[in-house]
Image (tube, rainbow, N blue to C red; front, side, top):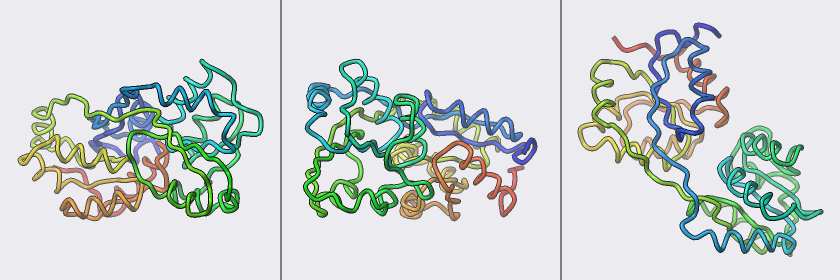
Amino acid sequence: MADELEGLGIMVTRPAHQAEGLCQRIEEAGGRPWRFPVLEILDPEDSGPLVDLIDRLDDFDMAVFISPNAVNKAMNLIQARRSLPEGLQLATVGRRSAVELRHFIGRDPDIFPKQKFDSEALLALPGMQEVAGKRIVIFRGDGGREVLGNTLAERGAEVTYAEAYRRGRPPADVGALQRAWARGEIDVITITSGEGLRNLFDMVGKLGQQWLKKTPLVVVSENQRELARELGFKGEPVVAEAAADEAIVDALIRWRQGAGEVRT
């Protein structure tokens, strides 16, 4: 894979503290990562409700972590205050979240999808079917999709949300980005969340949106592909099989081997 992305300029939009793994893999494949974070992960403005829920973890039967950020923020606070209750089932929406949780607890979560990685895939697993009467806490960022919680509630669970972090829009040098576009230095953009794509669209402004809409995208879910269509992107985004770094690089290689060409 040493030259699969040779000469390709790739915008990496992950939060700054999460981008280096993907950037390194891109470089190993011969590509040129262009760092442009479109999200930053912040503590809740009021951590009181989160602390209260953590202190009451014994009241719950299952804890679900929506994202690696939810795992990191929640587990650091949990371990600072207490141990996890025995018998508390742990679930994650995706593989990256499962890996992150393993760093804290030394094992895989009890329930997590091993192929498709979204709320629907988690909900399809056997362990998420018979939940009537169970008390489930969902650790997530501020806002977000309600599919998981709503479906579990429809199945009879008592669902509580714990907002472990909030998302912000980082400062950005949009002028430098526009110059990079004009010089042909960005061939493809990687997107790992719908909110990140919306932020990027807003951050670049009207002029930048003309460049943006013409630049190919690699996304990590069908929902993000649909959002790109709604925003008016010209090409059909490539969907990576997961949000993991290696899956994104695999998708970049697929794009390059298909219609993808380096800009000249």
